[in-house]
Length: 419
Ligand SMILES: *Cc1c(COP(=O)(O)O)cnc(C)c1O
Image (cartoon, rainbow, N blue to C red; front, side, top):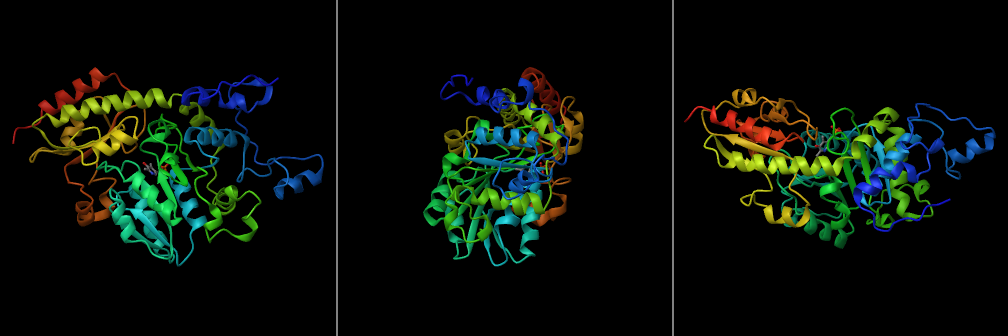
């Protein structure tokens, strides 16, 4: 029955046909949505075998669900990993990862340029006796300086938001592998279409599926992928009961039990289906959105009303060469600072296509005044240290026709008062 498989299929071919490869019920082309919470067995011994991990199967929806499993396989294939765990949100993925792999007395080194809620969560960890150092991850030297005997994890994002710093992904990967440290990369901003962190030695990859992978702003989700790069036998926090015969599964097993089962932020099957369908067009959407962002960043850079543009695609960007080397394209997010005297709210309101909204990775272009919203809680001093000016606007560019976006930005920029 098995069809001959074409070797080395591309990203989209594999993704679009991934449900079929799992031989879904009735030959359906989409893995069905299975809303059932529990699963019945004719032989009670089978139920026990599933509980004990001796038999593949489903028992209770908080721990596993067939629709969610199909999505996990897609994510693993996209990231080139050995297994993935899907959770309710990207933050659920990050918190489950940290809380199941770290304990009091451990030390974590994190990039200082982080998604705001991740930053806030890592500060919560500090209250539980986990030491966290925030460093300028654009250079591996800053990471190396903070290494200690109890350092367990190094955590970075690919392209930070809103200032778009690009972490020293290769350098930190080499450092972590040399010292046996678990290297965790949040790949949300690049998505596996632009970059696969396993290629720079990441042991675990986090994705907010809410953003580019789902891609339509209509479902929340998150995932952790084990790339197979990390040797869990050297990780001291794996509990004896989770040291299964295949050592490459230790991390996934412990995160599944402690992070997903016990903490309980399970992904709903309906959301898993929505995200899986959305993911099929990831490369098409991402290519268009990145090209749009590039064109708009250039337009803004050349305009008198804009004093600064943060976008890795511009040659002036401090990590432009690194981004060019590592990523297929430069991402779909950029930020600008407006010239003195131009009100950022007025500017945002004068854009007709761009929606004032906090999300990113949608098909629509969205803009937000950073200091007044997502970075409001941080206060002026921390904002300054993170390079966030009061007039900064962040744009998540969508897949609209490029000439329409260019026309919209042009009219809004031209309407800005002269200083
Ligand atoms: C949005 C985001 C998250 C959190 O994802 P949610 O699905 O909103 O919980 C984590 N990391 C990055 C880089 C993000 O942009």
